[in-house]
Length: 445
Ligand SMILES: *[C@@H]1O[C@H](CO)[C@@H](O)[C@H](O)[C@H]1NC(C)=O
Ligand SMILES: *[C@@H]1O[C@H](CO)[C@@H](O)[C@H](O)[C@H]1NC(C)=O
Ligand SMILES: *[C@@H]1O[C@H](CO)[C@@H](O)[C@H](O)[C@H]1NC(C)=O
Ligand SMILES: *[C@@H]1O[C@H](CO)[C@@H](O)[C@H](O)[C@H]1NC(C)=O
Ligand SMILES: *[C@@H]1O[C@H](CO)[C@@H](O)[C@H](O)[C@H]1NC(C)=O
Ligand SMILES: *[C@@H]1O[C@H](CO)[C@@H](O)[C@H](O)[C@H]1NC(C)=O
Ligand SMILES: *[C@@H]1O[C@H](CO)[C@@H](O)[C@H](O)[C@H]1NC(C)=O
Image (cartoon, rainbow, N blue to C red; front, side, top):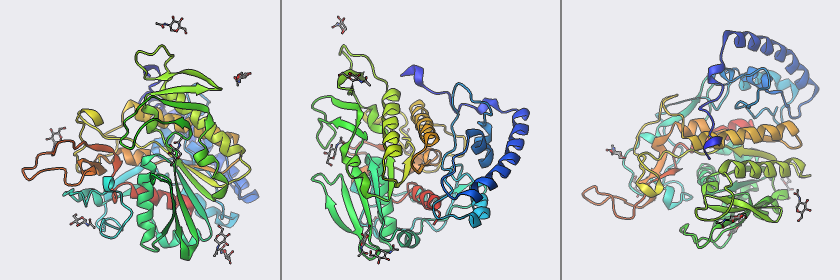
């Protein structure tokens, strides 16, 4: 894997005065071009990279502004859609709003706290129900994401449901995506309590209907997005190595794709697992198979190929839902990993720049950026990147930790045997609620 590891924040050292002048010129030019684009069409607006960097203008992005296409792509900003309901009249609002890069900012104290608790929401799974499981500190609940240059309003369930009348959403992915769905259901059920109308045997894929809004929300379990033969029980103990097919998408989601008006996809973590990889009907190698005489398939290669297949499917599908891809969710294990006593016992967010993530975080995020940008460049379907990476990176305090387990400590305050820390999934309520605040903003409602 070593050779794939990306440099921390490529582009950071490319800043120069020269670049600032170019940037200013590009900004001016872009202003003119933008008027033309918007007034001639309210469809998707796909801009060249340099224009996007210039347009968003925040420090984070200008620093990585590369005006010539370099050998290595920078992290690009995404989400350049003009929005579906926007007309050219809304041009001014649009400019105003989009001048703010909502993904770059800081966590600020929020005295009003979360919109729901363990007592008011019935959709929190026990492993993410930190309050019920006995987490005592409360500070992690009193932060809100504040983008530099604008405010991000809290998720408004009423507005969301109102604008989603007769619509259907699918959220497709792994257990972190399911974690996100819990937050969404908690926020929406304050307005209307939905009825569960479908679940599979293991309750991994589920569907809820909000009757009075005729809104349907589907959760689809597809941790790899590609065809996978999984030989493990519900505790994650595997009986044989996973077998993954890089050229075949998982029918769990593709067969249902045509039913949805909006789709959110996110995955990644499962690619860290030991797996045998197939392509075009032959075994091409294996990831992390010690003692097997197989070529090593890197995480990066497998994830990149998978995303290419996924985005190609989306771009070429005759059905055109609005698709959000949510970026990699970083863990915050310290002093070890899941299996080696890793902890996450911080009680406050990091400050900007205090923590930049692990190599694997930056690698997976970069792959998502690259492939997403290639996909929107090719075009064909409305796609947006819900980039929760930076804001999540700053929240080591909001994971379940030992509180994935009910009352993990005994009376003497000692950790009970068999309690492991979960520094990957997020407490609900908690920092993960901000993902929905961002989504609300991106929907423009
Ligand atoms: C919610 O958490 C509090 C402790 O923070 C606990 O007293 C209460 O019983 C929990 N409610 C439910 C429904 O589990
Ligand atoms: C929802 O569907 C119903 C029945 O087809 C229709 O009467 C109603 O106007 C629709 N509402 C919206 C907002 O599309
Ligand atoms: C609910 O929405 C669907 C479209 O998603 C529509 O076909 C149906 O008529 C709606 N039902 C009602 C009762 O409005
Ligand atoms: C598809 O969904 C079923 C039921 O939820 C699940 O058992 C299966 O593992 C999923 N397939 C893949 C490839 O993840
Ligand atoms: C896939 O394998 C078949 C033979 O099984 C071969 O004819 C075909 O060219 C291969 N396709 C690709 C894209 O490699
Ligand atoms: C590993 O596989 C290669 C090619 O398939 C073969 O030439 C070699 O002998 C194998 N080595 C062992 C130790 O099995
Ligand atoms: C957090 O965990 C570390 C071990 O990883 C430990 O040394 C430290 O004392 C803990 N801090 C608190 C406040 O419990």
